[in-house]
Image (cartoon, rainbow, N blue to C red; front, top):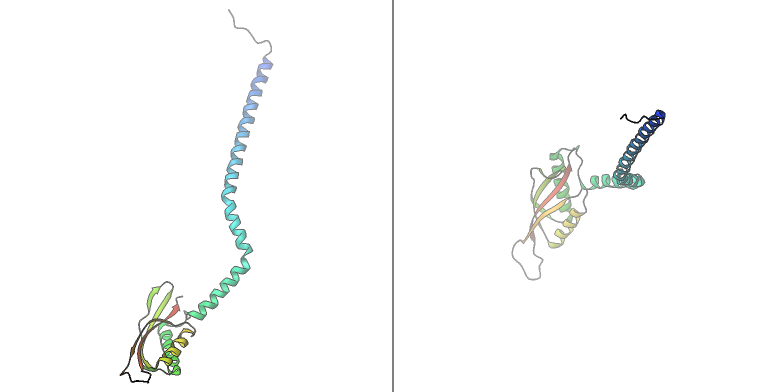
Length: 186
């Protein structure tokens, strides 16, 4: 027995070509679908970043104003990095002595201590003072220190009555102050 022969071989060729074309179209469709899915996933990843950037662009004026305000506050509360640590310490000590004297306090001793780097990006310069004053003068001096610029921070205060208490008299006070000033590092 002989196998049957195709009577129309061109139909078989067309069928094979049609199947190959369909397979090619199916592979192309799968490729396009895969690329579409990858692009959609990438857009989902990028969308939050894009929204944040849009928010930053919309807030650009407010951010610039906040940066300018931050620069002003830095200048108001800290000493510039162009000044030497010793100059900053001595200048702050002189300013403290003037504030205390104007408030009616008597400065017994004062000392600028070595700068410390315990505050990130700043040198903290401690100053130690011993004073004598009546309670009102001490209160006035502390208020003046608080309102000084660049800022001076009283880190510790020890107050004792100096001498004997007399009836009806305001006792003099002896106080030890530790004050710190900040200098920005370059």
